[in-house]
Length: 298
Length: 241
Image (tube, rainbow over all chains, first blue to last red; front, side, top):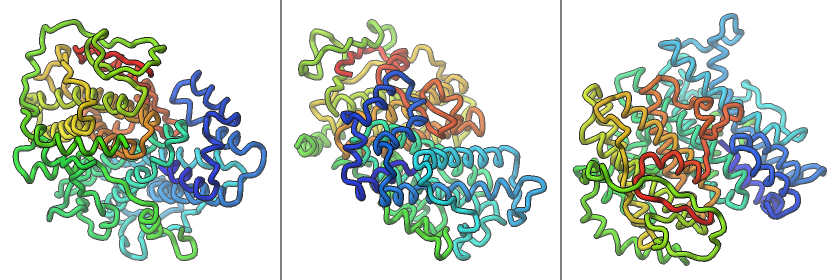
């Protein structure tokens, strides 16, 4: 999900990154010409080579490596959250602290699917960084219990899903806040957008899993909470994940006036639901650090 | 500068938007109307053109600038909104109460998207498209869900594929705010059809998804319109793509 962040950070430390990635530059010509010949689906596989071409044969600037590795750290975080659960459910595993039971095979399969997608994103970054990739973050570096805030994350299925929803909805928002910085590099933006909507699909399914697991109903899309607040997750500890999601005006257009909903309340819900909102990088880091041990925080 | 002008026009248009009979139109009225299809005009039309080209007829999507991309999105949102208005007004008998409620939600979302683009584009907006839903059996849950999935997945592919064409970060963000909602719709509908297929990227490969990379669908506008053309009666001209 963090290709966007990567490029944004690259720009901060390397003001010429977009020049380097610009298709008019010789370094990028072959990449973009290739893009015309191959399908969009094959584009991301060329991402690693794109970075190499942008920077030639010389080593990546240290600050650029730092940024890419920061994004990679976030991807590791998400991956480990799901992977620990799946490994813990594998017969004979040494992981013994995943004590909740999946209600059925489908729910475990869904978490496995999401885990696999996060792993694919990690691999994409590792490939782009090559030998400059940071040491992998181990599961031991993480704290998905968040210092006790979510102490039952691996013993209570509902808590696990609640945290998962927070991760996915955060991921969708993290991308959105930075998308504009990728405009000068259409190929990378393309890939980032494709990651972004996968995170949204994950979020929708996790929300459905939460509904299936209990008595509360969580819409597949981000709505308003029971008291009309921005956080519809039912978990006040993740208010930061949903701050600002209750926007009803877009580009000076009052969306609540144009939904066709039958009354003001329904119109407000529809206005909030029909547009997802971005989240700035600092806020994302604050959320991510909840799940990393001291000394390992971003 | 264009953006400021656009916003001013938005404010002027809000009232008229209010008065429109949004979503009440019977789309059946279109049955039997004129010739169908999407006309993809070959590249080479490099000169500036207006949005309505009398020589071509129908609606013209001119991808020379962001307005063309936004009109492209507006066209697709018109299609989606028309579909969900019809479904929500008379859902298949087998729909559960929860399904009816969520399809009504989706209807509101798609109307909001459609009317947002109409307001944002103001005088640059293409006209209303005539749809052709003759291939859809609105009494059949299978037909309705299958069409909904096709529309949502295609919408995701369209926004993902068109995003890099935008020049304005503001417009890109707005498109980004919408595409993730479409992806949520897609996941919901897919799970209704077959639980667990919310992000079946292998099945989305024909729309440009890549499972090995964990990447969703993305298609260029010509490919999207070729697929959507089955449901659009108005001739759509594409230039400067």
